Length: 512
Image 1 (spheres, rainbow, N blue to C red):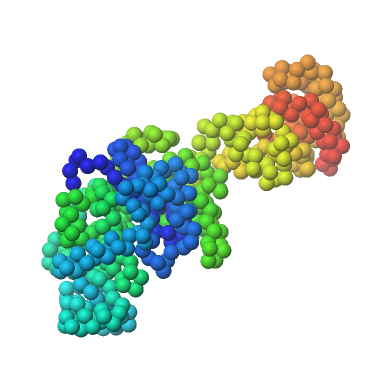
Image 2 (cartoon, rainbow, N blue to C red):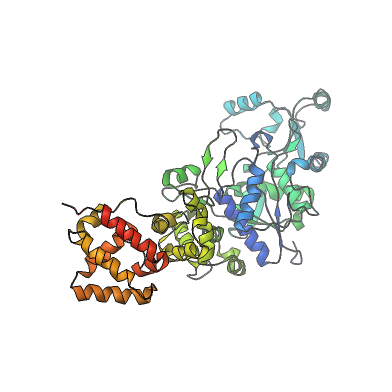
């Protein structure tokens, strides 16, 4: 590969279900690398496994990437000069390249049935279909030519296997893991094509597509590392070794606790999503939650994922997409797996929510209000925005706003018993009546002007400041917590504030 080639990467998911968060990170790293190098990102759908295809999965993948802001340059939706971008629509291409390997003697046809393969595995411990066993199997290398022709003429099902020559060292140069050397004798003759569905396997399809789509860097998960030596051999077999892409195998995302790869079960067990969007399984009807529906901002998810397996070289944590693009380096990717710290993900979301303008956060809060039976149209945009601004420092998710801001939109239905016991004495109703009179005579309800008037009144009467102010808060909020009291009353205004105090006087009974 020459340095003059334009950087081109590809994200190639299979439409077998929802996109796992590990796949999202792979897509993100591809995107960051491409953008930093002025390159292109291709989205290719690997739907060659017809048995595992799930309706709706392809649309889910496209929607998830769009939500996260991972922009695709060429793909099923975008089009491009290297299409089709769905592998099931490239059958003629794969058929042609399969024939090239057969004609060059680099592959062969195998007629072994599943039962025959199972019998071979049972008879030979650690059976592998390779140079040491292939001549004892039913394939075009072991069978007479006329027998092979007869089987093909009769329409017998077959697969095409790559012919791996034993005893040579295969070198894989990986930009994260360095040089890896594997002896070809440990490789089996992988299936490249299946006549049953007239489709290639992953191994052939990806090599052909990466070459024809001019991919310069293959950035993928660590689990694909064992297949890299075979892919090196395939590039050689086609005569493409000089233009083969660079391999980049990313570290795994690991369970938050214990050992092993992050799974959906971990998310179910510990209460966090492992999919970017909510997924409705078309077969079982089961619903799996997603980061979007759980209230995460896409920018927070991207920032969080970027730091799982990569570091910027310093202590920086909050980085927008442009910063990530400018700072991303493959040599700062870890070789070891990254534990999935979902609590850190919440922290990122909290930080991004704090940076969000109050008006934008208020717009996100409106559906939450509606879900709780509150009509946002009953309140001005300014009212909702100011209410959100007062409590947003306390939240990790948009939905949390209801727990902290509900009292702005709904009068207390009950009063905190502990606060009542501590703050509401037999004398308090009379004191609250006095407070109503003080509030009613305020020249201004601005927080900075109203507060000193009320505090001076409390001091002049010799009342206990904490008891009176907490009782005041109790009648208005329903509990003794929340934003600054006079910021609350400035927003609610005199009519609503005084009405709530009167309700509290009527409904709160001193604890015995």
